[in-house]
Length: 424
Image (tube, rainbow, N blue to C red; front, side, top):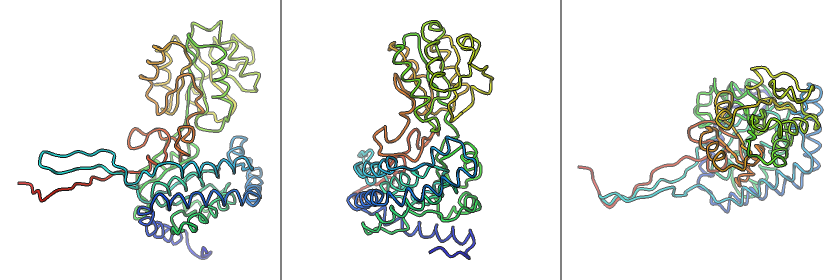
């Protein structure tokens, strides 16, 4: 039990020390043991569906009182389908190969030394996230599978839900005989706990992962005193090329923007080739408007429909996370690539085209973590990539890029075997 009289510093030091003590057991654990914990946690989630929904109802009530946006409320909500999805996600992670101990590369030197590069855990991971309670399950499971202890600090809006989910994860650890401190949830909404994780836990935390809005991620990147894996925002683009099939383009654009507007893989800008302004742009714009999406466009787009609002320079940079999209007409694939390079956030971009050369150029030259051809940007998701789940989408250019799954939560060491060699 948490001592109510403990200061935030005392609480966080206890949590950190417990995580460090628990981590070696995870690093040594066999795949069978880790998978047993994951499957037991999945069963606990299903068995606790009623209590999870009840806990979530308390969070939703608090969210409404705080005036959270529709997108934030959607992220916060748990229902039987989402609980089942969490449980299935844990089972999918259990089905993955164990990355720990995998030999990435090996070779023999002329002097007979045999050298192998072998995957190892990162250690203790701190994860700071906002109103998405499913991150509790995904992050806990991914860290467990990759042999890392984890300290989870969810948003105050989701505390009841995250606490209930965390209890299921602990039940899984207990069933497999693993230390319960391997997955810990910070049990306070005091904002000082976040500051302490960022600046005062270098003896305990090896890597921090922020998952949330731009303000949270920027704070973590600015203040953290340990390495950070994360992305600042997801300003994602769909480019409809002159060789695009119109029906396909409409399906992809509507899904990319409107399937779930509050996720980082939602398309925020639509670029349309100037060669198809007459044939494709009217249908695309009207399809978006008819689905209740606000369209902000350049002059060519505004000429299509009086309901289109003028786009400002700021719109091309904006991650709306809402049913709003900016639309611009560009002069071919080269201009689309230039627009994305100038305004994009290096997250996820898609080209819709039947022209193989245009697709090749887009995929080769767009420098984002994920680039797609003839597919929705909403596939920017670790589960859709076959990773079981993800902690987030990294736009970093080192260590991990794109969906952060079990392999991305590992490092490596060199194992060298000799037969008495010495260096002269």
